[in-house]
Image (cartoon, rainbow, N blue to C red):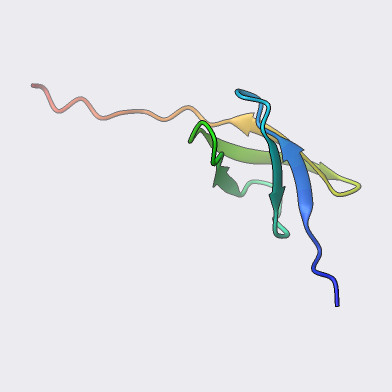
Length: 61
């Protein structure tokens, strides 16, 4: 029995990613550069990934 997987490339470090089935809008972390990525589109088993900007809180220190 085969398990369906999706593939894509990290837009920052270009690491090849293989992930379980996901849907548009889900997020994941690149295991290489630890960047948070969002699934923008899925076509023929390929993910189109975009970097998610992380807003750090300013604690006023």
